Image (cartoon, rainbow, N blue to C red; front, top):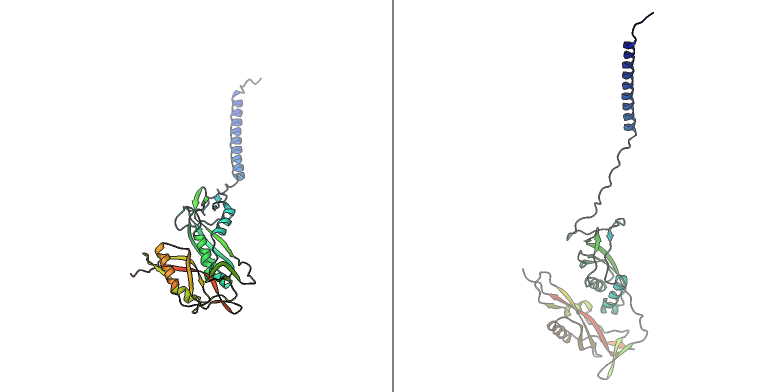
Length: 289
C-alpha cells in the first residue's frame, strides 16, 4: 500500500492555479483598458467667447450681427412716437425748396455715442442742398438718447434716419394774407413770384453775414427772416423769424434793407406786394494763420 504523502503535489497545483488566475486577471484588466480607451469619445471644443465686442472708445462703433442676445438698441425719448413728434415740431421746410417746389426723402446717417448724444451725422442719400441741410440740422439737434448696450455696457452705434419732405398741395389761385401794405393786399403765394435780379446764388452770397469766430474752420448758423417785396420791387418791413444775438439780428436787418430792387411778383400781369421768407447764412470769420 502506497503511503506517500500527496500534500506537496497539491501545493504545486494550488500555486499553478493562483498563477493562472493572476495572469487572467491582468489580461482582462488590460483588455478592459484597451476597450475603454477605444470607446472614449474625443473631447468637444469649448465654445469661444464673443470676439465682436470691444471696449467702448471714441472711434469704435458697434455693429449688431442680429444674433447677439446681449444687445439692447438705443431709445429716443418717448420711443417711436417721441421721434415722430420731435420731427413734426422741429423739421423746417426750407423756403427756397418751397419756392422751387422741391421735395423728396433725405437719408441721414448718424452716430449715437456712449452717452446718448449725437456724435456725428452725415447725408447718405440727398435730394437738394437746401433739403439736405435741413435734414442734417434736425438730426444734429436731437435730444440725448438712451444709448445702446452690449453685455450691459454702453456702445456707440450707427443709425440711418429717412427724413421726408412733402410739399403741401399747390394752390390754384393766388393766396394773400390779412396783412396790407399801403392799403393794398400782401400775397403769400402767386404763380409769378418775386425774383432777385442776379439769381438766388447771388442773393445768398450777398446776404451772408460773417460773425466773429475763433476756430480755423468757422462756425455756421442760420437766421430765418421774412419781408415784403412791394409792387415796385423794394424790400419792406424785414423782420426776424428765428434769430441769434441782438447784434447779429441787427446786422441781418441792415443787410436786407440795402438789397437792390427785385422783380416784383405778379397776378394776371399786374405787379403786387408779396411776402418772402428765406434763411440768412451767418458764418464765423476764418482766422489768418
